[in-house]
Length: 471
Image (cartoon, rainbow, N blue to C red; front, side, top):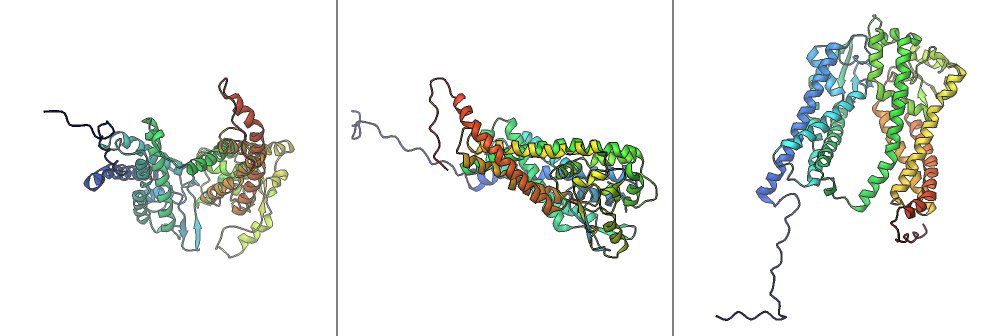
């Protein structure tokens, strides 16, 4: 039999390729099957995180002495209820003091860091051996990482309910349900997302994450602004914790007796116990020392030396004692915040001249970090090459609002009546101005160096790109 004639044009027709399957699976039962590994990872990671934090709460309830300033909200009542309360308060949720209509937050922020690390690590480990996870698309795995917040919020709500109504010397503490649920959702989502990124990176699949150009640029700007801020907070944490440890060892300002009074006991705190407490408050100290360096205002304390962001021997040389005395003699307990405020400049009467001058190194650190952040943001926004001067200045100035929002949020999360209580509005305004002005100068540096660096990075024989259009 003769061969069939070729189609017109002399070329055989090739059938079109089949359409690609929809993202996240092939639909129907198969689509549901691809979601199951994500559900398992999210639920198991949340359960692991909740159990670990419950164990942490149990250790705190059993091991901490009565005079510990960390143990105030978790040592009273039964040990089991105290363990549940410790786990719930690790989210930095607030507690309602029902007898005086007041809201408090006492747990150090370091336990939140533990929660985030456990959550991220759980997602990372589970992603390695739960069947079907590695076959999921990268973006889908990130979404399921975010979903970890839902089961964690449910479990933390159960913990908070189990710890409700804890009597403490006639005062009733109960966790704020709205605060607990919202913060658990947030931390679970952040920890799960970080764990999913961690797993993808270990598998060499970060390049599969699909981002629109606009989202990628926003993330680059945020990274450029926040990395120097994180570095600033790390240095401030080391400096601040060192100062607190030295002063606690010296019992400056009779800190042991004040800590015992704060904890509701007549037995003074031990030197070792007080040092352990201030070390546990290390992240809080880092944030407050950065705020001091930025010149932010702090509320007048009611716990004397223990209420200052940086302890000194005679705390009353720092703040107006009349404001504190007037408050303590009054009957308004709707807030534990007296009138008046102070800044780093008010430490001049409480520190030797040399030490007071040295304290302004904190301010120098803040200014240097803002300058570095502006440089990084401008470089990332212009792709590392030179850009128009106006555009580089504008990108550098974005450090101001980014830092202001970040520091306002951090300050709100660590607001307590001990170890400093910064004024939120002052924190926001100071970091806004410092970040915008010094960030703009950093953008100027990026603009002046960018074109030279970009041209020098080109291979030999390749002409430099044309200059960008004017802003």
